[in-house]
Image (cartoon, rainbow, N blue to C red):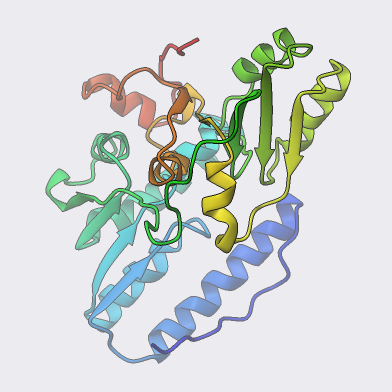
Length: 286
């Protein structure tokens, strides 16, 4: 394997600095990609957004095959998270650029049927879309003995992001704040970690613990220390992301509570308007 590093401007939390970082990386990736000769296959991911345009350019200028591995569907995910307005000019232009590369790609890899249906609604030829679900390393995460009797340990492990529902679990924790039979463990980080921590302090929830991201070597022990795992997703983000936390919990042989959309996105003309930026009607399991 040969790794070509691409210089870019520093990544920042502000919108302007993040955009500058993304654009500088895309420009550098295009230059390096074209200078590397003719590859057989170019695979582009979805971070940073619109990296597929670099793959499309190499595909056209070098005659290579191009595959897009969609981890997040842009700009749909930004609309679902409230970062972009559904019908703004920027949203439409970003969608047009992303779809340009998708329709010309030799194939698109998606993480689930809901993501496949969303892209098909955007006009991507369905025969080019291939579902390849995420996975967990079965040699890294293996079943452990059940924790000793005591409080029921509910584990949320991973990113606490904007696409994850926390209103439901927060309401449950508030009702069980003084119940020693339950313990809630949050391991990881993300935009909503501080929100959840602040909620626990404001409501005097003492049966919740917060841990950092866990090292790979400790994942079996970490996952095996719970009785049940927690996976959440907002209904609006259906098909834009696919929760992958469930695979690690399955590898650890732990049951899962899922809070999110109760059923897949139906394949109907209404999807097209949703994919164009309109909200997706969906109910949420209690």
